[in-house]
Image (cartoon, rainbow, N blue to C red):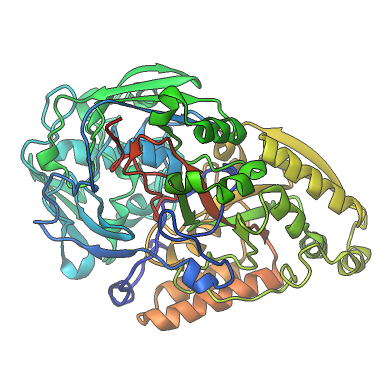
Amino acid sequence: MSTRTRSVLAVLAIGALTLATACSKGNAGGTTAGGSPGASASPTNLTALFAPPKITIGTADDSKGPAIPPEGVVKGGTVNMIDRDDYPHLDPGRVYDNVTANFHLMISRGLTGYKRVATGEYKVVGDLATDAGTVSDGGKTWTFTLKDGVKWQTGEPITSADVKWTIERLFADFPIEGPPYIQQWLTEEDFKKAYKGPYDGKELSNIETPDDKTVVFKFNEPHADANYAFAMTGYDIVPKAHDTKEKYDKDPVSSGPYIIAKHVLDKSMDLERNPNWDPATDPIRGAYPDKWHLEFGYQSLAVTDRLIADAGDDKKTFSFYTNVAAERTQQVLQDPALKDRILRQPSPYGDYYYFNLDRVKDIKIRQAIAYAWPTKQIQTVNGGPDTSVINTTILNPSVSGWQDYDIFGFKAHPEGDIAKAKALLAQSSNPKPTIVYGYNNTPTQQRETVAIKNQMAKIGVNIVAKPMDTKTWYDQTSKVDNGLDMYWGGWGADWPTAATVFPVIFGPVRDGGYNQSHLNDPAVTAEIKRIMGLSDANEANQAWAALDKKIMETITPLVPALNNLALQLHGSLIGGAENDPISWVISPNTIFLKNS
């Protein structure tokens, strides 16, 4: 039985849905307050500030292309993009972070996806499918019909056999990084043990392909939200005839509007139009530029200074996720000449400093660190109150089920409660513990780590700081034996509620999994399963809120990080730039070049 099961009534009772795609990118830089692009907002009212986007289920007509164009759209030209990291995976089945998923909008497509219909308003529609799916058998059976004219970059048609193959290959040994939902729903929670993939000729009997256009999924239990799951990049389709297993991660076949023309690892990537992509089949992607030139290796200060200067080709340049550097925050906010080029959006993610419970076993040590945590100092390093708001909970305020509490006094004592922390350590099994702390090796994170190390020294905790590669951050920290005592991690609800947060971040402990704290508590697991079975959405939300607080009080598996408020700039000739409230990165779907 899948622990991801949620009753049909609970899902359908939710109106405006709140979601984000899986892991957030590790601390990309400074951020700031706001809602819609260019707007300003006070960070004092979290409920209003983190209001979710409106998301509904679209019709078959909504699933037809082309995409709704942004105002003033112009087609053609080459757009430049500069960011810190190259993409860790080009195989969609290995994608479970927001930045890489956002990039894949240009080269891969799935059965369903999110169609932007207005600022902050989206519909789940058929992408390769003619609609968002037909459900039957009380929610256990989902049927999708593929559109006419959908093709691979080779010109070959995308078929139901490709869809079936795509899901089956996720059971093989090598794709360990992607989402688990569909696999679990088809088999069991530990799906890798249930089936070993299609490469030895064995198939899953509960994925049926009665013809080249039709695919039927038969789940063990009802899942009224399957069309949301299929919209995740991890389920984008891979061609059966061109699947090269592990090698596919370096040389994918495009079903999207662009193909990878050239890729110099960790330096640059060039995209050109896919001649076999038909906008009439695509309600999601505008694909207005002819070409994209992507460059990697830029820290936030370099990106910020180039975009402020807005010279030459930088007028045609933007960044998917790099935020204004902390040391430039006030300059950018106070310069009226930059106002029209500023994007602001609150993060939909929960960000945490996880304890590794396999190594930091004494709760009094964990709680002492939490009480002493240098929240204010970290906020200052990241740009001050204009860039973030103090968070005290596991759930992000935008997620249904969030309720405010402040057990460790992060708001009352943002500089840290040293006296309380020392008292707890004195009662612990080790009053002078050593903590191996892993951090993203960026200038901002280096300064943040210094603040943490200095603060912990005040209570007798020795921090051994370990710098780590930003590109492979999750690949390293998601190993069960990662050699770390504490490390940052981010998570966003994959769709509607806390039901796609707690069961994942406190789910199975395995290599490549997302239980970064390694929490394995039978009472927590039982309560998660109980809440998942509730039919009343309000009752479930109240239960999630209570569990949030109880976990922090009785286990303390993490220290909540700041809720970031994005502040981004773009070049003056970039049109259609909008920070997607779902993924919290700038979507390529609406980007175009203005006439100079």
